[in-house]
Image 1 (spheres, rainbow, N blue to C red):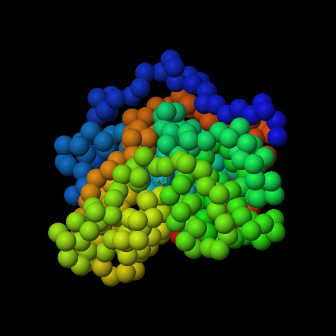
Image 2 (cartoon, rainbow, N blue to C red):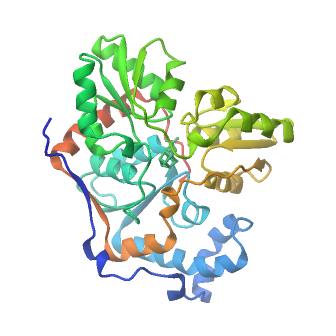
Image 3 (cartoon, rainbow, N blue to C red):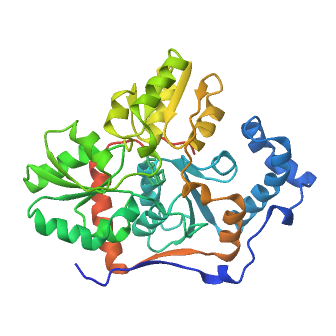
Length: 367
Ligand code: 13P
Ligand code: SF4
C-alpha cells in the first residue's frame, strides 16, 4: 500500500461565500404552503417561533436540491428539521452506504451527507464520480480520529495472517488498509466471514474497543482490538441504566453496541441506530430509553407518538455541527467537497463492498 494516501476537504467557493443565517429568509405564504407537510410531522418537536425561522431555510434547500439535482442523505442522529425537512434518505451507517452503492449513473450528480466526515468519505468511495458535500468539514468522529493507516500497517506486521475488519467509523485511508469494513449492524457476521475467508482463528478489529468486546461475546473468533472509543457512548454506565429502571419501572432499555459491554449487559436490546428504531416499532413497549446520541429520540418520537421516551441526553458534538444554514450554504456554493485519493478509493471500496456482500440487512430506513 502506498504511503502517499491522502483524503481532503476542499473549501471551494465556501471561503468566499458568507454563511447563510436564518435572518436571510422570510416566512412568506409560499414558504408556509410548501413546508406544510413537514410542519405536520415536526409540530410538537419544534416551537412555532423556531418554525418561522427554519421553514424558509427548508424551502430554500428544497429549491436548491432541484436546481443542483442533489440528493441529501442523513444519519439517524441528525436533527428532526433535517431528517424530516430536507433529507431524501435517513438511516444508519449501513443503510447510508447501501444508498450510496445503489446510486446509478443517472441519479443525482451531487450528494450532500448530513452526518460526519467518514460517512461522506464512504459515499465518495462508493460513488467517486459524484460531487460529495459535507456541510461542515469539521464534523469528525472520536473513533475515526483514533487510528491512522500507519497504525493499521503496524498491526498487520504484528499479527501476520489475521484479516483486518475496520468499523465504518474510520477514515478512507484506514479502510484502504483493511480487508473488510463493518458497521454496528453486521460486525459479528463480518468478523466470522473474514475469519472463514482468511482461514484465521483471529481477526484484527478496529478501532472501537467496546464494539470489539461486544462482538467478542457473539463469536468464537479471537478478536484483536484497538483502543478507540466513542466519546458519546463511553459516557454511559451500568449504574445509570439501573437508576433509570428504578425511576421508570417497566422501561425498555435499548443500547448501541459502542457502549461499554457492562452497559449492553443491562439492556433489553442492543443494536445499530436503525436496529433500535425497528425495536421501538415492533416491541410494543410503552416506555423506552435509547442509550445513544439523544437527538435520535426526537426523530423516533415523531414517528411513534404512542411511545413515551425517557431521554438521558448526550449529544454528539460532531453530528450536531450540521445545520440547515450550513446545508443551504453547501448547496449554494457546492462546497466543502470531500475528495479521496484514487488509490484509496479503489482499496477502500474493496473493503466496503465485501461488507455489503456479507450483509443481508435490508435497506429499510425511512425514505
Ligand atoms: P450506526 O451505524 O448504528 O448508525 O452508528 C453510527 C454511529 O456513529 C453511532 O455513534
Ligand atoms: Fe463518532 Fe460517537 Fe459521534 Fe458516532 S456518536 S459520530 S461514533 S463520536
